[in-house]
Length: 419
Image (cartoon, rainbow, N blue to C red; front, side, top):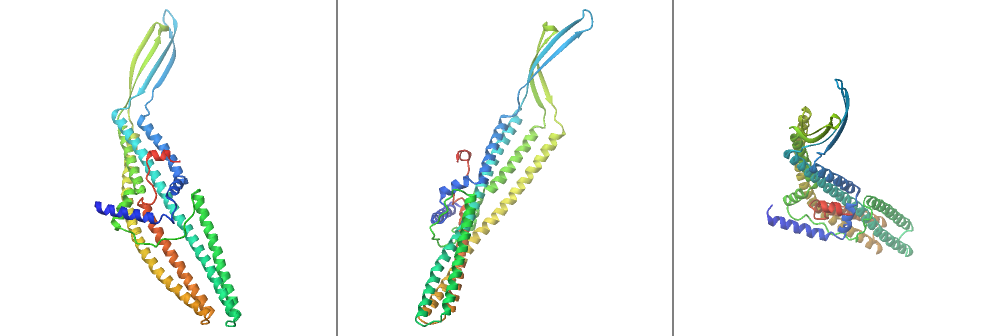
């Protein structure tokens, strides 16, 4: 992707993100909610622990060993004698340069993997927040739509009452209008209950998040740029792929560490002994070698096998993410087109319902035709609204996965400092 395409794609995504700020969560509130999410909190704890583990590997585990012994020497030949003896020793294994370098590399790889895992947890929580937010937004929009239908049904009941009072309609039509109003009120109550459940689910997962929207949804538009641009942007920011790569690198570093242990482990120390009841004093230097066994070879082979498997899995994951990103981009374009078609159909049905209601108020047509037209118009509105929300949800997911919606990048300082 050349620089012009990159710049154009970035500007398009940034403009789209700004246009959607009114019906999506506030970015600062969303960021705070994501960092407080259970999965992110657990990943932060694991990141802190793995960072400490990495520091331990870099420092090494070669420690001083102190020893002491007490003995009683008994001389059987003349002149017989019993002599107390004792000794002190201090020794430490040596970490050879190759071993030290392998340990430091593994420590860095462990910390890098933990950081990538935290980033993936943050990204996955962002997906969950977005999905639950649109669940609530869908139910809230339907509740508002049914509330508007109540006003129409009440207006229709007033029209029926007027025609009955003028003797232009039978009294039975009042029963039908009242039944239609009762059905609409029931649907609105059920929609309000679903909205409350969706709101509670959202707040249970992300407590403290302001669950508000301005009630006006923007018109969906096809995603800007090309599919190739979007795929490149997603892969460049994919925490899932980065975590897989970091895991493979960590296992590879572990295999190198096992390889560094295939040689001997030297140790060096000093000792002091008091012998012959204190008449003799001995000071010296001792050197030891720990000879490796077959277990170290098999440990290295197992780590190399795990590393190769992880690299293959990361390659397959990259191919899958590439295909999924392209499919998401194409789905966003298709859903925008679906909404346009559904919106045209809803407008036509709404116009037909208005004409039927106007004709009835002027003494033409029947109430059954009015109710049928309004039911069809309502179904069209619901379908268009759902298509609109689906298109907006897909577009928001594009922005999220390309890191143009909320800040999802992680570094060590922010991971430790963020509340």
